[in-house]
Length: 367
Image (cartoon, rainbow, N blue to C red; front, side, top):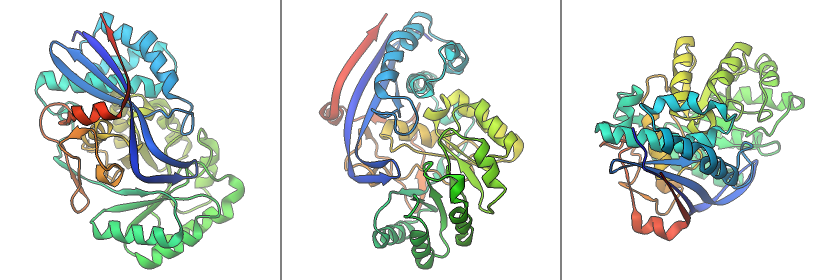
């Protein structure tokens, strides 16, 4: 596979409403979109790093620099026989999984389009639709209850609530009273410590499917300790940055559920290795989201068709997040079920006129 060009595009896409977590409030998505061109075929990827290191330590500026100086020149110079070889080839540049993923996704999409097959086929997924859940940011209790009830009425199979100390038990009590049957989870985004164990133990009263990343964003040891103190299963997110980290977390007993975010773990080849590990050990997986545009969301939908992804993921309707997305057709769920975009690759095309409206900069790297 010979790569002729790599395009790096920065876009700013406003959210319908601010999304509030323990990190703070966000009002727009600033994303790096990648395009690779090979023998007249284009493939698209998306980077999920933030402008500032809020979620993990990678930043948009740093990722763009690494792609410009190392990853794209390597790809343009050497090409690849198959996208799966890039994970190990790029390991000589340490870390930076989000930067590597941003470019690797575009290569996978381009390769699948050249083969005229859906991306899910290359990944071993055989489903044409997947169950999805909704992730709700922090708001006053009454608003959160109303939001949960609305999503239940829309057919979502799982609702996840963002929480932090002081904004947790009252929300759970109100939501559980209003919706006693919903599959409910919470995501702390690392807002607690082991000193909060008495509060975390009280989560056991609410029949949660799991509690996501309660402790430090890079920790495995304290999570293993916490797992022995609570009944609710622990799911890790931020701490799982590679197949090796997932293996370590499972060996230590740090988590019983694995959230897979393709950008966080280093790309689709890394996802395949994590998938096989979790299936072998009987550990349930689900696909997390980073409020991606339609490009990243489409990739997530395809990877979530793999058989090891047994819990609903954060791949809900794009219209929940954006008044207008940058891809066609629209990625919309019905009754909690998201259809996998048909056609080759990720199955969506760029809405070029609108994409140009939200584009901040474009750079093309050539042979």
